[in-house]
Length: 295
Image 1 (tube, helix red, strand yellow):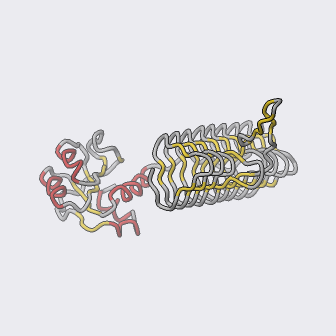
Image 2: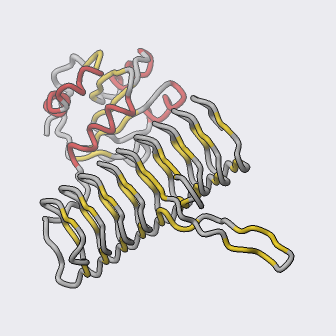
Image 3: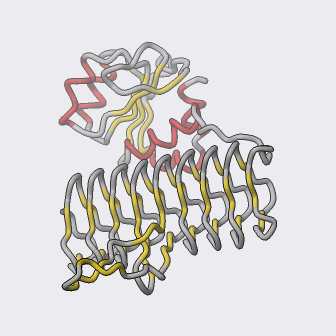
């Protein structure tokens, strides 16, 4: 695809573009995308700002998505690299990736080895892979994709277009919204860490609550979200959890948050909206984190 056609193909996303190299000779054929330091002829890459200006002098990319830094753009022109300037280079590059790559999406089918309780309700156009277990009372929406070895405990609800990757487990009464992604090895709604000390030792408090993931939530590999003794654990709309994240029982995470790898929330934590928790942040029991916080 010619670079100019790629920009045109982005459609409404191209409104991000503020300037396109006017040299008509710099309209290379783009066959893929690549990181700036691994780019080869025929690939498109991006640079966010002057901090990475030195990469323009070294890259073998045929085209670049650049910030609005004029010096950066001039360097690309000097090297004969086609470019487009935008206020959001990383976002435009993300849309460009989607022009060359789409995640694996199996055709709707129910594998014969799947074990599905007669009381379960399945939507239309669902994929259920080998050795999936779907228990009584489960409700699955339309266009849901359930990869091999997923286990759904009783009364789980899965919204439309949600993807459950191989070997994840969704415990009883958990509610997962539309357009969610649960990656391999994640466990949603398992028993919270509820024990009461007595003179005879620890008394186990039954965890009768449930876990809710609102629409658009993504949970990384081997992450865990526990249900509480009573009430709910809730993850807000469009929040993203990295791999190896733990959400303790009864916690609440707001909308549009991002929790990086090895973040751990103790029980009863309240996290506001648009919060960023970087790798290995730990938050103690019952702590409240306000909107927009970065930790």
